[in-house]
Amino acid sequence: MRAFVITLHGNSYSEAAAGRCAASAARHGIEVTAWRAVSPETANLTMEMNGLKWTWANDNTSVARCPTTGLRQHPYKTADQRMRIGCSMSHYLLWEKCVKLAEPILILEHDAVVLRPLPQIPYIGSAVMINDPRGATPNGDKWAAAIGAKGPGIHAKTVIFDDERPDGLAGGSAYIIAPHAAAAAMAAFKHLGVWPNDATLCRQIIGGLRECFPFVTCVRADKSMAGGY
Image (cartoon, rainbow, N blue to C red):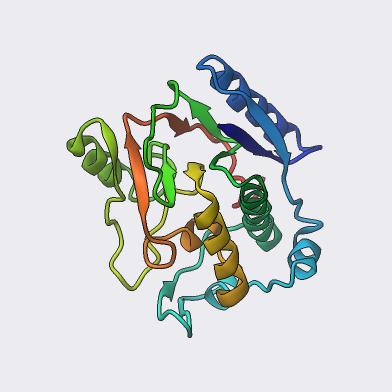
């Protein structure tokens, strides 16, 4: 399976973290290719060139509702809005890559560290979260405990948020996505607007999300990819 780590070229922290991610993956037989992240300077232009518009939570300033889905949108802590958009667009371009390859791919953010080899996954569904939620989401401890209680295997995504709030992957830090799900996520960006990638990859919009235990990766981050360096 092809694997990509989103890397902000020219940023020493991101490049070092991505190198650590790739090295940890190599120790477990996973070859990871660096994927050039959309920079904050080019985030809005990249979004516009793809015919997209940022529509999240009143420009990420206050709680809102999506007029199409009715889902509640909560602002994400972000030092620079362009970083959040750039992160979403980096995932978008990898979804596009997945569709073009016509095969599942592994998407990693630079703060992911690989702990063990990828297991055999006979059925991906739409996307499989392989990341330990602890440190990747405010509900990480609760989520990790719920996944662990299910025991080893590939399980349906644990319900963390109510049906009115996007209930997606833990930070979008490490996941395997199938081409049809990548296409659905791209379509959601076009139809609903650009959201944080983990909000778009939610059970209400994409469906069929799954999670892996034992966790294959964890997050070790001093700085957030989307929150600002």
